Length: 315
Ligand SMILES: Nc1ncnc2c1ncn2[C@@H]1O[C@H](COP(=O)(O)OP(=O)(O)OP(=O)(O)O)[C@@H](O)[C@H]1O
Ligand SMILES: [Mg+2]
Image (tube, rainbow, N blue to C red; front, side):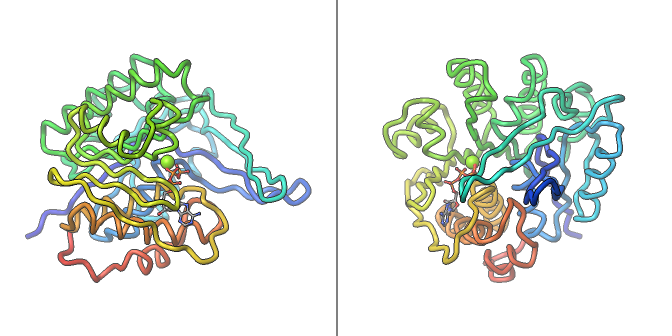
């Protein structure tokens, strides 16, 4: 019997208010690590997928859990924090420019490492654990240490750890501090999926090649450097390669493009593809997401774009 594979993403999913028409708002649920897990859920239908976070005990936290369940996503041993609530953001449009307003400083997800034993349990028996720099940024320092330790333990037990540094300056006290903490996560990562403009802002990298070299020097063996509509750089099995971005006819909203890319890449790798082949699938997956509003494209659309059923071997 083939053992079911377990995947988990760790982070914060927020309530999202969008499409303001006068004062009527539409509520959705999104967050960078959830967006990636969403793509993995679509592309690896045989896998068990859990979102590892912390919930509040209010109506909106119940809605988050129901949303996950409706889409075949569990939440492992994520704690419920009495009196806490989810974070919230609103998207406003000024012409075609989108801007974001956040209410997240006391969100429940900041306590996702409040029960270290529960966190370790959530990260046990996994094929893949996925985390981002946004997850690191919302935690206080002791909680961040607990999370990085738990990832290190999972990795020692055979779990692949994948990390997108997703640097967002406003979430960090200083650039130096963000570098230090993101470097600590690189040290427990098998696969790192950065974006060049973010890395350039954080580390001053002069080129995507410099980003790749710096992360490789930190001891990471598998790296894909995304760069919007430019080629992605891939380091896989000791060989550097490139993968050109797909041409997305009708791109309307790039929200979540990098997150979907990561989902496509990791799904393809878990299906046995090499790094460059997986990056091609990742671009196709991201191209589907930039053609819909919001970060979460319908599962069918993602499957078609990625090419489900055409993999050399299925996980
Ligand atoms: N305008 C676009 N048209 C087509 N594809 C795009 C576009 N922007 C991004 N993509 C696709 O999405 C991938 C990731 O984009 P990008 O490098 O902007 O990620 P990111 O900055 O991590 O995004 P995010 O905002 O989700 O964090 C690219 O490699 C490419 O495949
Ligand atoms: Mg990104």
